[in-house]
Amino acid sequence: MKIRAIATSVATLGLVAASSVGLASPASAYTKTCTVDQSAYSICFDGDGDKFIVDDLRADGERAVVKWYAYDGSGREGECSDANGSFNGPVVCDYDFNEGVNNYVSFMGFTRDGASGTKHNMSWAYTGYITPR
Image 1 (cartoon, rainbow, N blue to C red):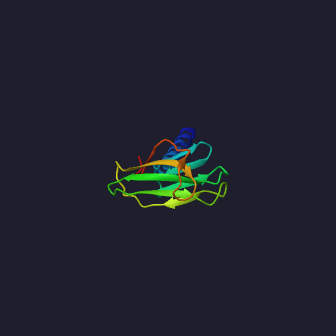
Image 2 (image 1 turned 90 degrees about the horizontal axis):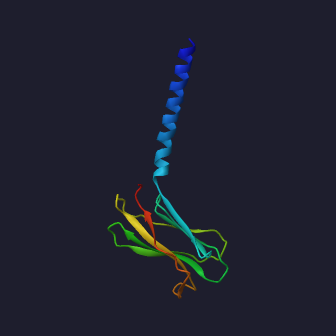
């Protein structure tokens, strides 16, 4: 009788653990690539929804910008900028990139004065995967 109760408990625990793993896997499949550069800005690419997130972290009168290139067969490139002042929350730019196992975006951050001023505080180039790995 005791052995049967223990076996039932172990089987139930195994099913609960298996369903937890099954539920957690899709959410963890997407990647989010983030960095803070020069203590001036934070930039992220979130593969779950194809979003760039830019946050100005320095009250220097310049906007924080992320410049991106899509390697998804479309040849698209663009910019997303936080021009609403420092510490006013991030700006989210939502794009629709082509899905594919080898598709990614390359992006870098910088600050600049106005929409087309000289670039300052340039970051390294980063890679964000469009399709889950």
